[in-house]
Amino acid sequence: MNLTKTLMASTALTVAAGMAHSDGHMANEMTIVSWGGAYSASQQNAYHKPYSEMTGVKIINDESSAEAVSKLRAMNEAGNVTWDLVDVEAADAIRLCDEGLAMEIDADEVLAAGADGSSATDDFGDSLISDCFIPQIVFSTTVGYRTDMVGDTPPTSICAIFDTDAYPGKRALNKRPIGNVEWALLCDGVAKDEIYDVLATPEGQERALAKLDTIKSDVIWWSAGADTPQLLADGEIVMGSTYNGRLFSVIAEQNQPVGMLWDAQMLDFDGWIIPKDLPEDRLARVMDYVKFATDTQRLADQAAYISYGPARASSAPLVGNHATLGIPMAEHMPTDPANASNVFVTNYEFWADYRDDIDAKFQAWLVK
Image 1 (cartoon, one colour):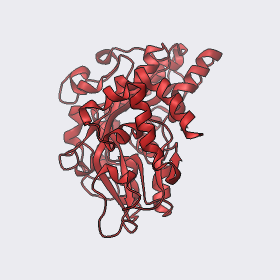
Image 2: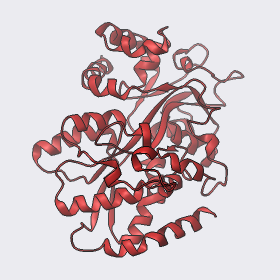
Image 3: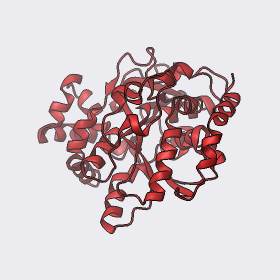
């Protein structure tokens, strides 16, 4: 069954329930916050559009996820939370939960059971990293490079970022510490299993910044995931970090001369949090939406538009070909064995504890 038929069939199964969705106790619009670019497009295709067509609900897309923590803090202080659902990385979900800014949920009560009969808890497994977190995808932060700017020896190690002799030219790195400081310590000789112990100390933080200092003048700092793919497409950088799905888009969909470096890719989870204390009609709408948008079929459908692995185990067997290119998607996932020989699993609990402090040091370092 092709993707269009699958979507039609799955929509038909829920259309009867959808007729009840328009009743008066649910809000008729939602503001959903995400990351923009190819990722938001995948969400639009896989579940925003089908849900809107099924219910008549208007979905307003906001691309502020990179600033989700600070903005939700400000909204909460002002007593005016205008967002209904927010897409965040795992560490930010833990922070928002710990600060009482995100609502705790019972996964088995709120989320759909797996298509294979498993409970939501069993189906999502280790991706349920917080009582407030509703998982969607497994993704990685990794590095893309211009194949026509690296000579005859394309990079194979993450430490190529720091090798300006072998690979001269501008690099693009995220304008926040997560990912950068781990790679900096790894390329400064710290063993992978000791990275977070070292990074927990002031001396380790300074060591990471000192390593980043060696390339600071060659770095273009990005804050949106779409920035690096655009810089690569325009030939303004020789290499840069971004999310693996964004690189897939620029390579496979745009056919740009870009390669992807999987070495020491930073694996992480991404998912939804529901802001605390939403009005009853808005909360009812959000609950209805997330049950639909995170079911087995919807998460498998998303993988037809972007190369992120679905967080549900029951979705994985349903991942097929790209919706328009027709190429198999499984081999482009960060979790594919050929890509995962040297992964670096982000310690989201560490970042939940240390993020504010290291962020402040990193931003102060940036302006020096």
